[in-house]
Image 1: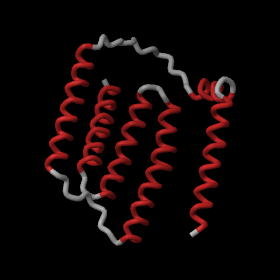
Image 2: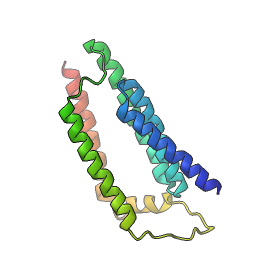
Image 3: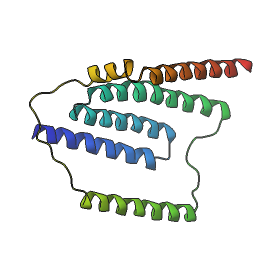
Image 4: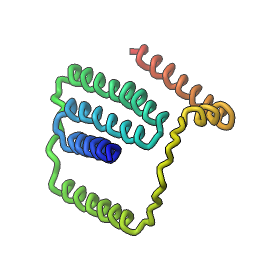
Length: 166
């Protein structure tokens, strides 16, 4: 019962703050609402016993990407002197966005109603996924893991060189 209440809290938090992200006309409000969206998703990961994904969600998305977005917005708004708010949206764009949204909603409802959902009996034993993911990354997927590390290092060096030229 408590698990369901916590799930619905995180679900409402995630959906509500995601709606604020989409409908907000102020970029700063949208980014701070994105913070609560990421926290809600991390909470749902915790409820699914996906502890590694929850910690990754917090460290990567909240700790890295969200801070980068906030600094990017704060720096670019001071440089350009332009108020960062969404401009006028044409009626034709709103019409097509509404049609597309309606198609997606109808499709999702159709999928939800026609899918044969699997319901597992929760076990009393809870195990950590971090050990399994760590062993997989350092044995089976070591080449891909190290290739991604080298690629990110090259991207950081390239970004630093581009930034220093000016």
